[in-house]
Image (cartoon, rainbow over all chains, first blue to last red; front, side, top):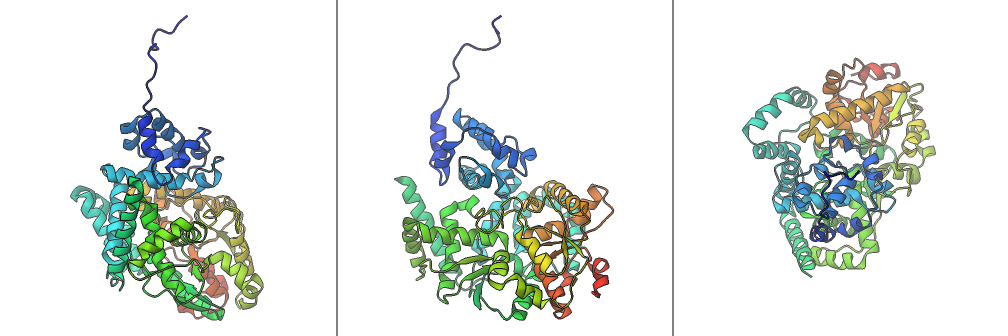
Length: 200
Length: 293
């Protein structure tokens, strides 16, 4: 018998979204995905992900843009590189996940704590040229807001005390590198070059 | 032997015991180590996720350009720093377009990198350049009978798979443990992820990963873990209290940097063991070998 619950209307794919992803730095490789699922099997944080990388690429192909960027998949990636090592099509998946993170930030999908952490880390680099863990934590919690800060500080109080006791958490920030200004100029130029290339 | 050395941000913070023991061990081996002058952050696994790979790699390349002025190959102990420096270096050597573009950007600060250096992962360098025989000859306090779980971590063997080790079941690291007189235990999860910076953003991930790792290390009678990675060490050492509480685990396992264990086995001055920084106390496990606080 015919299943009447299945619509006879054809599924409409939106190929434009896939093009947007293919245009990212490592995006070209995503075209090669054959949906084998090796990435899902290899991923250390698969259980935490809304969709495995394989499923995320499927979402991309059917053009589900909003669902794609709202997924936590890229933010759960811890860059352990197992997927990159194993992918039979040679897709540098961890690199793709990083492309997706920076693209998501650019598009304003920044509500996840991991996005805040990434942005705080980057600010910390631009601040002194090196990352001071204390400064990173301060930036992170200031951006997450008061309630998460108090919750975080409460949950982590024993950890923080132990680290202080063992001199593992210097409270004094190191000095900026001497070449901070030139490091920032280098980065700015590289970003400008990248935008120029993207515009082509 | 003389080399450039890239410590990375961790070694100035949470991984101070790594720096102290690394410097002592290289000095004892008679190796000249020169910290890259005015180095900047490598970007860790984060910068490319904010500004993209290219700007992050060019930022990393500033370090390569500074090091090239001395002409010495670069030793990198940290896993993430190694990943970024080594991948960027490879791009300079193999990709002419990248080199041209990146040098244009570096040129803004009067810098240039010609791709003449090698970026060496510390473990691979210890085995291939220093050699296990030399390590064995330095051992004054053999750690006979000590069962050690060698936690290589995820990035170190996987940046360039099969170039110096198996990306999933690496063996190089165990050879160093063996050279120190200790017994490397079977540790199937030796290259599994520790949860990385989820320790801040979603600690459950780090706690769960830590539990799996510790369980795997204990299964074959591991008494001590060693690692070459600052992130792995911190997550397993500092979060062990939370791991034990969360999973009702009643055994502790100290987690040392490999260079700390080397410093102990070489019988270098106790301050270079830098054990006061270890959160899980290693003294019960090591008292048999004359190691006291």
